[in-house]
Image (cartoon, rainbow, N blue to C red; front, side, top):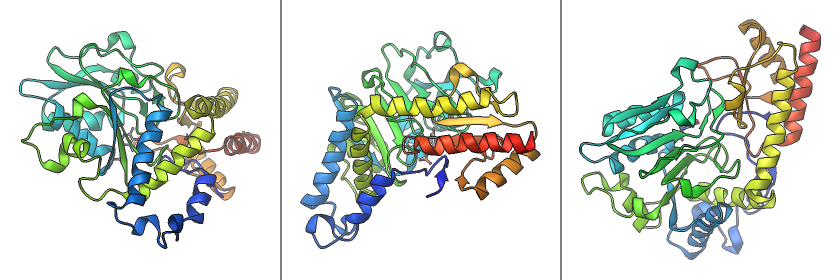
Length: 359
Ligand code: PLP
C-alpha cells in the first residue's frame, strides 16, 4: 500500500478495509451486500444504531447528546447552522482561524448574520488566537470554532468557554484524534472522510435540546429536528458510508479509544515536527509551534523549486499527498488516525535522505 498522506479523503485503517472486503458481497448471511439492503430493514438499522451508540461511547457517553448522520458534507453544516440557530436580530460569532473558518463565516453572513469573535489574520492564520481574546457578540446565537485548520495546519490546544451560548465546532479534520470534553459543546460536526470513514456521510453530535425543534420556515431536509425526530432516517442515508464509520469506530476502540489514539497521534506528529525542527532550516514548520496541528503538518523548504523536486522524488518512493493545498502552496503531511507510525517514520527517513542528497 502507498504511504498515504492525503488530506481527505484520506487513508483508512487496513484492518477495516480488509474486514469490509470480507463481508462486501454477503453481509451477515443475508445473501446481499449491506449497500443493497433496505435502510428500513432490521439488519441495516442495527448497524445504524450501533454506529451512533459506539460514537457516544467513545466520547464517554455524554448525557443528552444525539448523533446524526447527514449528507452534503461539512459545507452543508456551514449553512444549516446559521439557518437553524440564528433568530431575527441575532448573529453567529466566529473565530477566524483560516480557510475553513472563513467558509463557515461566509455562510452565516448569507443565512443570518456573522460577527468576528477573534481573528488570527494578523498572523496570516498561522496561529490560533489566544483564548482570552475570543469574545462573542452580545446578540450571538452561538460561538463557532474550527478545531483544526486543515490547510494552514493549526489546531486548538484548548477550547474557549462560550458562556451561556452554545459552542459549535467544525471538527472535520481532527474528530476522534484526541480526548476532549464533549460537554463543552452544543454541536460538533465533521465530514467523515478524514478520521471517520469514507466520504458521503457527515456526522453531527449535538445536545438534544438544541436540535429537537427547528424553525418551521426552513426547508424540511435542512432542519435539524427533521433528522433528530427520524433518527437520521428521514430520507435514504448514505448506508455504506455509515457502515464503514461503524467499522472505523470499532477499530478506534481497539486502539485504546481516544486516549490510545491520541498517544499514537502525538508520537507521529512529534516525530515529524522534531525532524523538521532539527533539519537546520532545510525544512521549516509553517504554523506557530504552540498552534501546531497533530493532524496536518505543514512545512516548507527554501524554494518552491526544491519543494517540487521533493514532492516528485517522494512520489517515486510511494509517498502520496505531500503537496500543500493549492491556496497556500508548500508541503503538507496529513497524518490522520489511520496513518500508521511506520508511514511517518518512512517519511522522516526519506526527508533525511533527500536532505543528504540535496543539501
Ligand atoms: N471543514 C474542514 C476543517 C475541512 O477540512 C473540510 C474539508 O477538507 C471541510 C470543512 C469541508 O468538508 P466537506 O468537503 O465535507 O464539505
